[in-house]
Image 1 (cartoon, rainbow, N blue to C red):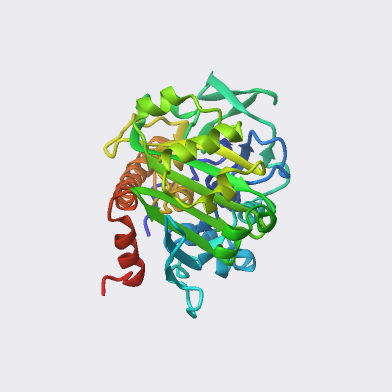
Image 2: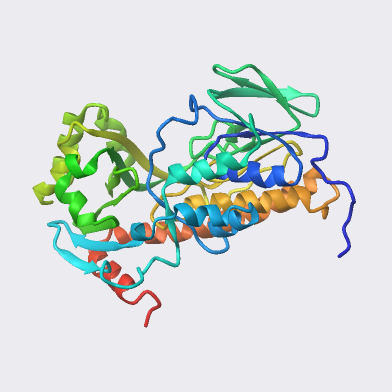
Amino acid sequence: MNFKTNKMLIENKKIAIIGGGIGGLTLARLLQLKGADVAVYERDLNPEVRVQGSTLDLHEGAGLEAMKRAGLIEEFYKYHRPTASKLRIVDQDLIVKFDDHDEEQSVAENRPEIDRAPLRDILLNALESHTVVWDSQFVGMERYGEGWLLHFKHAVDASADLVIAADGANSRVRPYLSNLTPIYSGITLVEGNIYDAEKNAPHLFKLANGGKVMAFGTEQFIGYGTKGDGSMMFVASTKILEDDYNKARIDFKDNKQVSQWFKDHFPGWTTVWDEFFVNDNVQFIPRPQYYFALDQHWETQTNLTMIGDAAHRMPPFAGEGANVAMQDAFELAECLTNRKHESLLEALSYFEKDMIRRGAEATQDTLENSDRMHSATALSVMLEFFTHPSGD
């Protein structure tokens, strides 16, 4: 193989990754395996902060490939949860229409699942000590020589030759690369996390049976799943005009207001769902769903790039977000360390063009899936998909 240069482009350079989520930590691990000088700046106070969010199903060629390249695939399988892939599909009255709990293999077991917290711990434990600088909420940065001077709310300033934004859908770093505004998808979801779910949501906990439940009705969707710590995470999504959402002014820290929101927007759904929405033990987060234009572009810089939701935010309805972020991580690490490019500008340009293409494909898939899941025929369409996943 003819390499263009014998020098690794990031040799003797300080790399700052903004955001200690799954994508950022994966990238840090892969770069450290190549001897890079990496720091991860994470706004969480410490590693003990409770990790919320759904379980993640990792895909071949993306999340699983990242774990293999990181040398962590055996650790992954120590903590992955086979039962989390088990699925029941129900209607709005919780009548079961599909159930693969008695099947030897789940329809989704080719995409093994793991809770976010143990996955993050696997990645954190694989990093060199003091790689992650906790309690470091990014507030801005300015040019500093050929690199950047980074400013944080609580941590001291830090300099870096290369900054990589991995700080999620509402990235504060992205505007230094692109001023493109996101597009509202027409769907808003409310996410909830309920702890000690067997006690606090007994009927819905029992129905999940250690796996996940997907409910379709009235062009709306509720999905939830159990986690290894006994908690459950759920989402309720519906079509709402952006202006209507902005005018509603619901205080999602007020559970009574959230309960009323559910009654107003999901009329006719069985009252058993009240275990989620009339419950003082639930923490709610509103999430209007946005995405970036499929043909987005920006001018490549020599000292700044981005991965994951910061680069290509998208709705969650195809399970692509974390997988695309983890693929971004190993593709970027490869470009920065494979000695095939003459300069950082060339390497980052190559990476960004490929990332934008992959992100656009994943965004298109999730938008199409979102339409299916919020259509008048959603239940029958999804039943057909899971009954005949290969189209046979």
